[in-house]
Image (cartoon, rainbow, N blue to C red):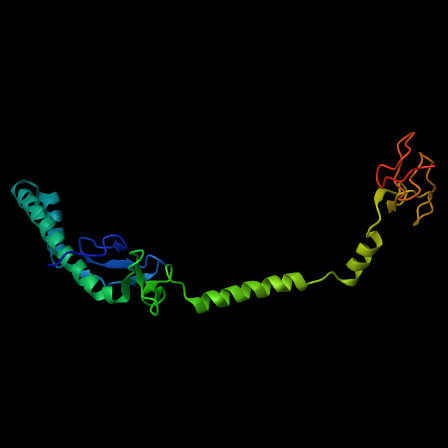
Length: 215
């Protein structure tokens, strides 16, 4: 029997009663499972195990000898079943010459490039994905604010909001004496810049915001 390949990307589902193997693609994780192959000696050895536990003694010693023989026989049968499973499944896989991964021919092999799709992505798929991403970005950029939002943005716009009215909580621009919404009168709490309306520090000769000289 030749050396057995697939030493990494497979799962052994074998039991005392038979053999079954599952082979996985290194890229996508999908794969193929072989049909369960019954092991005829499994039933016989099972009967000997039951007899050994019931009767013991000489018959039990014979069962122990059978157990040891079964272990070697089972291993040989398992190796044969695995070799046959590999021969059956191997045509569905290819090994990438660049990264040495075993990948499925169905989804993860770039036939035109002779490499797995990790090493040589499908350009048509990549272009389609990039186009979809760009289209989504364009939609997000093109979505504007509605009329009400635009109106609110325009009303606040460049105005410098210093505070809100203590009576109706309307946002207020700088240097106002009355609330434009409810008419609330504000106490004179200091001087304001004649150019930009920013509040001036006591004794300031120049505005700290715009630099205008104050009278």
